[in-house]
Amino acid sequence: MVPFQHILTTTALLSALITHAQHPLDPVDLGGGDDVLFEAPACDPYTHGEWSAEDSLRFIPAHALYGSWETDAIFLKEFEPTTWADTVTLELTHSPCDHSMPVCGEINSTFGPRHGRMHYGVDLDLETGDPVVAAFEGMVRIARAHRTFGNVIVLRHANGLETLYAHLSRIDVVPGAMVEAGASIGLGGSTGRSTGSHLHFEVRYLGQPIDPQRLFDLSEGVLYADALTLHKGIFAGLGKSVKPVNKYHVVRKGDTLSMIARRTGTSVKSLCKVNRIRPSSTLRIGQRIRLG
Image 1 (tube, helix red, strand yellow):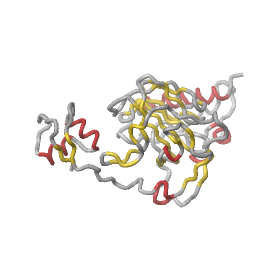
Image 2 (spheres, helix red, strand yellow):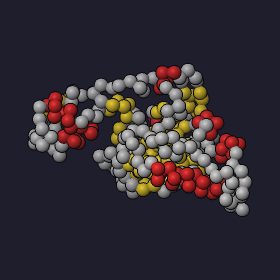
Image 3 (cartoon, one colour):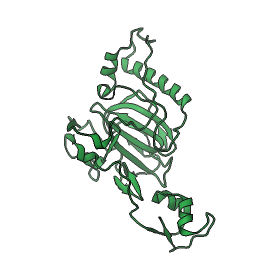
Image 4 (cartoon, one colour):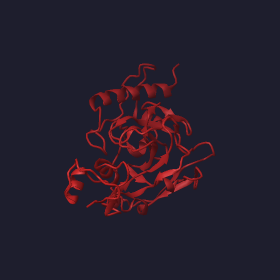
């Protein structure tokens, strides 16, 4: 008899392939396409049994919390941070081997305001081709290419958290597959909007970002505690606009207007307007470029 885990993987993959054919790329840089729910066949080709709501609750992590299995949109928006009124405690670990740092690299960029916009994850240094592993046991919800994140994987975990792994050079898992904590899911790289090899790592709950450093001591690669308590304060300010930290950028060797725009969260058109220059203008080392 074929294991049910294989059956779930097969049916989820079929759904994902159909989804990918309909929505080969996100219509916007930071969002998903139309909602496409996980739908197993009414009669399974291996067991000839009926797929029921109870099966979803049993085999899909946190299905009771989310109520659906979305295989297209990377980000889920289940609630607005300003309306959060609950306090929820999530169990993170039961043993030393049920969690892992995705990579053991230095922190290149932390969670929070960066170049005029919010950075909703942490960037961890790696070399292209380095293995990236699952932070916790979970099911693959997303495994595909994205304009911003490049090759990206999203895992859903039994406690309701989702983890995101971006800019991969290779994806080694498929939607619907169950993976263990510490299992390799792909190889690091610099795909999508990336200026060098690194892993962009996010943690989300019901679509809302959480600073990974609330869970992990990133320098030591260990969890701070066995559980994480979520409350309104954790999500405060996520929807607010962020003003640029610096008013000017000092041109360095190799800088171009497009590179400066990408780093500072603006556009070449805007930079040209405020600095009264053209896109083809030659930049001088040490030149100060106004950001706004």
